[in-house]
Length: 145
Image (cartoon, rainbow, N blue to C red):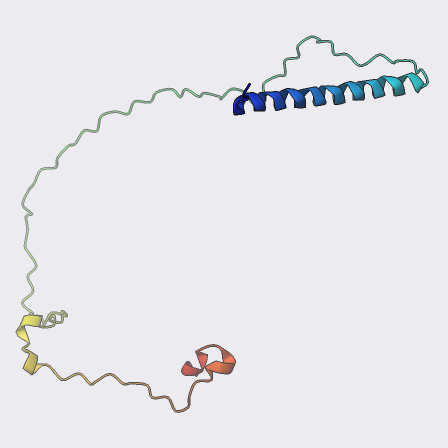
């Protein structure tokens, strides 16, 4: 008779179940033995829960107050145009002509040719007189002092 791998694993599983069943029976026997040696104690009734009447708490927030204002209708605006009448009477005319206080705007950029514009000076480059002390200070503030 040949035993296959699946039959062997089934035999091993049955043996392990018997071992576990024996351990459980031994624990139960030990518990029963130790229970018999304990002094008898009066058993107190356990707490029980009885569902009482349902309590309904009042709502935490009152409902919103809604204000309905009385409608107000304004009258329609009516325009009464004024009559356009040419003014009657002598007109005051001044014969003095004075120079206006307005300065003329600068000329447009396309009016100045590049060769007519003044030459802009080259930007000044800052020359360091002493080397910055960045090794000990750790900042570049020395460049601006």
